[in-house]
Length: 160
Image (cartoon, rainbow, N blue to C red; front, side, top):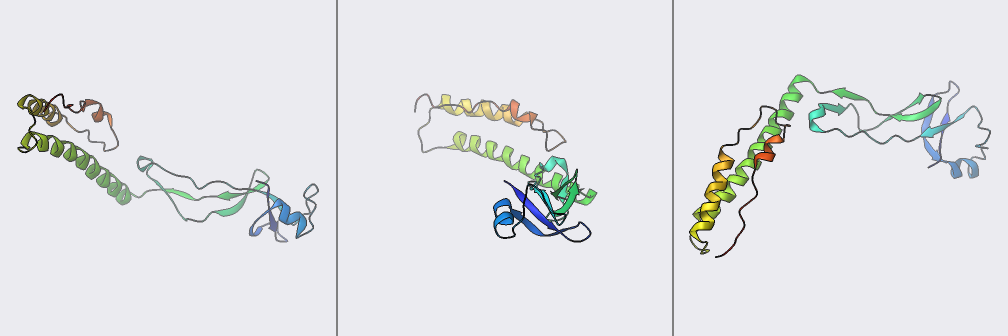
C-alpha cells in the first residue's frame, strides 16, 4: 500500500497517513518529486507478544516517527514490571493446573461411570491412564509445556 504523510515546517509528521491516490488527486502532489512538506509513510503492524515474552505496549496507538529516512508507525514497548510478571506467571500456572485437572476429571468420569455399560477392561484402561497422569510432575516454569509429552493417548472404546 502506497502511503504518504504531511509534514509541518520542522519536518514533523502531521495528521494521519494518506493513500497515494488521495495525495495525488485531492492534494495535487507529485509523488515522484515529493515536496518538502510530504514524506513516504510505512505502516508497521502492531507487535504481538507471547505471555512468556513479558512485554507489553505502552500505548495502543503508534506514534509517527522518522526511521531510516521514512516516516513509520513506531510502537512503544516496555518490559513487564516484576508485579506484572508474577501475575502473568500465576495466570499461566492456573491454566496448566486447570488443563491437568480436566484430564483427571475426564478419566475419573469414565472410571466411575455406572450407567454406560463400559466393560471392566475399558475402565481399567482409564485407571492405567489416570495412574500415568497422576505421576506427571509439572515444571516450575508454567510456560514449559514439555510435560504434555508425558500425557498418553486417551483410551479408545473397543467394546461396550
